[in-house]
Image (cartoon, rainbow, N blue to C red; front, side):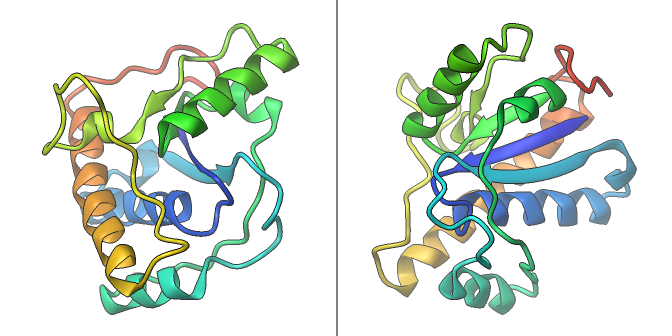
Length: 170
């Protein structure tokens, strides 16, 4: 299954989810069953490394983030089985991109925290907070949210609760 995580600039939240899901899949011995990528809805940081504060937070947990930011493209919507937005604004941006580009056969994008065991099943799914304008504690909070949510997402994938709709179908 091909999975794309999407945030604003692709320098904090989505690259963390990208790398954590890859690591967790590897730790569980299922890395060969998924392909993970991340992107941003906006172009401001294209080509830049992950934010240094996010890299430091991840490194404190033994995780290396060596990603360069990229912007989501219409072709991504055709190629990925699951596009997961880190927040409601990103979800709207992905849907808008699909509409503007005439991509009609793409799977419906999902909100990342739909898979968060602490909020799953609630009426309003919260965003993954953007730590960019805050302090170090915000990056640590995002790490904890993304780590547990990726684990729950991987559980859903392994248990067959998530199926590929079409694109690069697994």
